[in-house]
Length: 383
Image 1 (cartoon, one colour):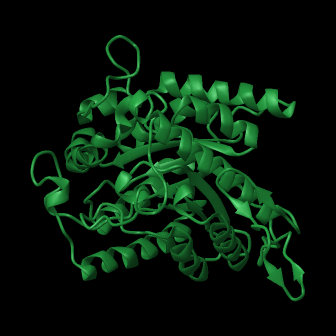
Image 2 (image 1 turned 180 degrees about the horizontal axis):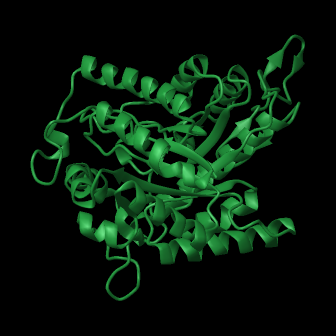
Image 3 (image 1 turned 180 degrees about the vertical axis):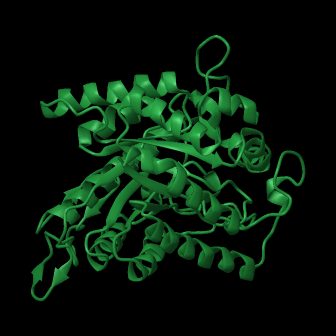
């Protein structure tokens, strides 16, 4: 089983938890933000030393409140690549509509080559209006009629951008003419002729993987048709199993072969390990509650199950006990967490596991402890 580590990558907080302060009332200094960036790099180096397969960075912008302070995971990934030898470096996720697609392709190819083929192309459509609408896109929702047009435009932009990126990364010469993107636009003179094709420089010299977050029914139908891996997070295991199996069905329809049980699918779970279950609950509660104070307004809890067995009503802010009961957070002793991972492996055939061991506000000393406990006391049973 390949096991990776994912961090939001934020500033340490001494007031994390439910209640005040409101997220937007915090404002961290440029020195504190940069210190967190350095600590993220150090954590990646530690992950290599502990034997993890991959380290995943995320892309977010303008978050002066300190939750996610890495705007360019590819750039930071290049630094990590120079300080490691084996660790694969993933993006969870590059927000494609916020990039010029050819610049994203160039930057990814550079990271992939300089790392010796260790970069993973992780792609997503975005969730945060503050970022999206400043950087050239909009955020909608397929199941909200008021946002349907924004959702349609975002999906169109993402789909065309990914077509461009795939052409650029894989073809010696390419052109693309769509509704959103036109590469190259007509009539560009160059050395006595006109440009009608482009060539990406550099292109990847190693094979690479592409993974996308699967958070909606349209995305569940699309990702396997593209031939990418699907990343599943923040869903009740019943919904995860349904989506996991549907992903395999669509893949077989599109590609004419059945996937192995865990192939092309990745499970993400928040984890916390301590000497006792009670200690683990006490330690993780502030970060859990801070996470939902942060993510709740973006609708991330719709993967929880309501009392009627259907997805939870919009706006749910789950308590820690609910997150544990629904097996969305894996909390307890090393044996407890190991048994819960084994339960998921039996249920889904998990072969790609992404662990989230650092909650918003946690110290980097605490995450070092978590990474060590997981690597020493939990993961060897799956080797």
